[in-house]
Length: 571
Image 1 (cartoon, rainbow, N blue to C red):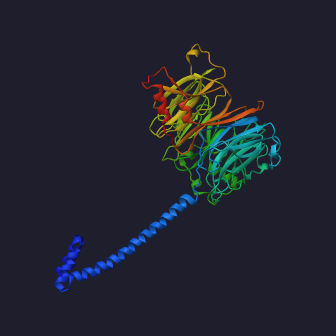
Image 2: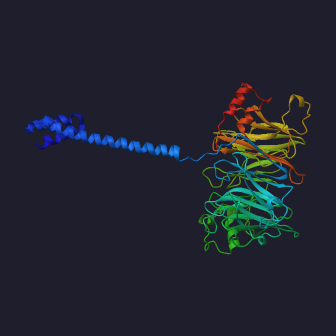
Image 3: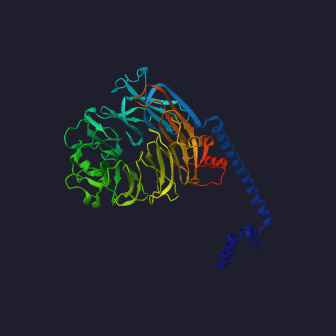
């Protein structure tokens, strides 16, 4: 009997639709009235089913009321509508060649920041009311990326040297802002709304000349906020040996972390292009150009500044790491590491390699561009140039995920060669000669889904200029994409004085735009200052297709423009 009962239960689980039949048969065997039992059961079940249905519709009705309340009664946050093009003009002004693109008001749309000086600096008491600012002054100005409206304007010193914006955790773990450096000894941190976070004590930087924007470091003093390193040289040096001065600054308060640290450097060569480099063992070094490329261990700077041995200090553990390979290469007297001494260096850039600390170092001289291993200093490749113009621009011409570089090379008094070299081996991927103009804006790049668009300025010859005669004032903005290497899009023809130019994603993955700063540079008479933001798709739509002689393309002009128009951009 026990086995029979178990088999019936198992069959009911396997065949649930037969369950009622089994139970009916069991009732008959027991002598009961199955019809009567079924009627009572179904009646109770029906009553329960009605209540369950009513409860379901009641809950559904309440949910609909809540949905309609949130949809129509409670307003949703309004996403800012970004204008495709906007223009903003300031009269009687001169400007600095600073143009920073940064989301200052946290609306997920990139904003535009620049510095200018107008002919009436006393408007609204803007200079007089600012503590530490004397007349005349300049204005750090932020325009909304959505429509060009003024977000805020901050009075700063007239002689601005460096502006660095978008510094994360400046003044606190959840804040970000800008670092402004000017003469004399002006160093101020400003948050994203234009309020001053802190100022460096002026006595610390008196009679000093800052050589670069601050280097952003990990937390040194244990307050959970990243810190800063300033590099100075004395303003007047008469000795046979110059001094390079390191000053560690708290990113939270602006107070110095210890005292100044002095290093001897060669006379007559001002250090430049400092950067933070992490070796393969995780040791932090400060690299800079001083004729050659040299490095100093950050832990050594900290130890000298604080006067506390590393073993006894509360220094962040990651900054205590050492690299035996680099220490063997360091000078026992000065502690400096000679990274590169083949030729006098002009530009120094760090090339990040995913998955490694050391990365690579791109070093440019007047006549070469050389990629070094960031740990062993071995040369990967070397590219010769006639006379380099500006810092090589990284981007992706190949689809191998390795940075390639656009290099501008002055090959004649009025002619330059724009070359894109392969980041893996230094081979030429693309090149073209253009008419060169002095003070031409720097090139720019913006990433597409797998590669990059490269933008640069100059003037390609036309039929009217085949004899070598070019327009004296006009110079153009060109666009190149590796999918159509034999075609250049001529986006814009400019006769105005372009002070600065940049491109960026104004909205994530959907709104790439260019920004032009037109007007009068410092030292000139005041005049109109104009900032133009324009969507790249609009520039492409109005562009002119220029075909290069060296190649052939089977696509028509409209097809080329349609392809460029449909390109998707990526961060």
